[in-house]
Picture 1 (spheres, protein in one colour):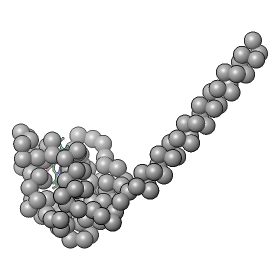
Picture 2: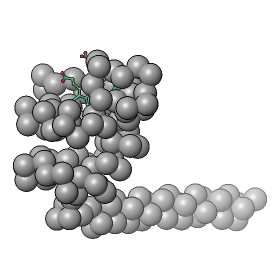
Picture 3: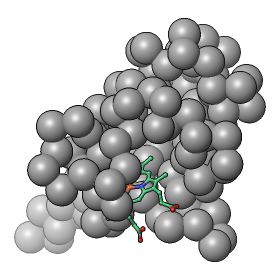
Picture 4: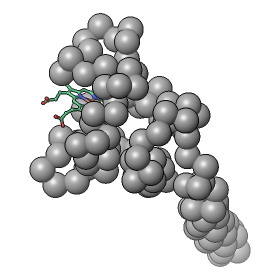
Length: 124
Ligand code: HEC
């Protein structure tokens, strides 16, 4: 009985160690693979918006939240220029945090947006 308890304890301990190692690796990998040097509108930015924003700000979205169609580059450009694209995405103070219904983009996605905006939001 005593041995059995010890084995269970050992198993629990190993699971915790394994979990800790895995989550650290995952974090490092995301950090490692966060590519902020090749950010383009056509691939990087569009993908982020598609996955997180177009369901409200897309051309086909019924609600067209706030009447803002970010799928239109010319619209997105104006919000990139006035700081609201980055400010809302990064949840900066005094901005409206997006996505509107909760959650937040990953650190990596926010850095990619910042990088693209800082480069003058090219339609590349
Ligand atoms: C669930 C729907 C929804 C999603 C998803 C969503 N938005 Fe919004 N968004 C809104 C609504 C509603 C408004 C209008 C808010 C207001 O004016 O109070 C808005 C407004 C905005 C504005 C202009 C608001 C301002 O600051 O004046 C920007 C920029 C914006 N959203 C960016 C984004 C980005 C970037 C994403 C994806 C990361 C996103 N939104 C995802 C609903 C959404």
